[in-house]
Length: 161
Image 1: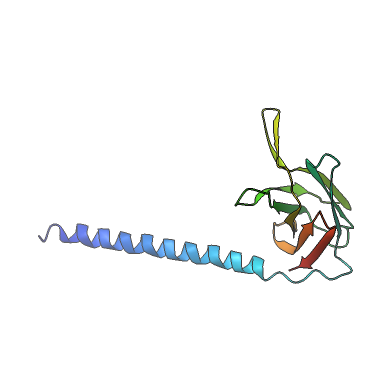
Image 2 (image 1 turned 60 degrees about the vertical axis):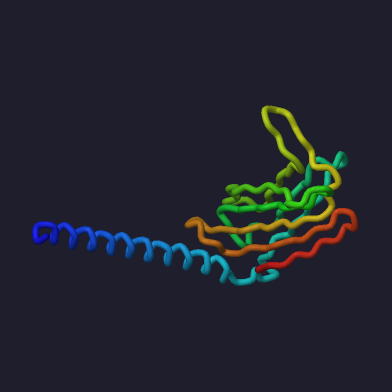
């Protein structure tokens, strides 16, 4: 038994160290998420103008973000979630794009999927949510905005948080 005692102590010490690393690692990830949630509201004078319009065939949404200059983001993350009649889960698309030095960002967002040059379009899309996140050169969140849209009525509501 005495010859196994150093081995047992070594294994217990290793388990304690591994547990401490896991605990500290989780705390760092949680604090990063909390910091993203505490982003200040974008002031009106720095708020970009956001427009979202449906193409004539209804297969794309045109996203246009103007007046990026005052906010000076380096990257723009966008996430579009929309409701499709007959489907329980919302569908969507998103990406992160470089907008450093640009005042306008434009994109055509496909309402559906594309694989090997074949398209499947989501029909009847009318409502959804567009979330934009603006980041600086270090990837830190400097502002975000969320817009709920209703293409059938032409209503949209924008909130910065």
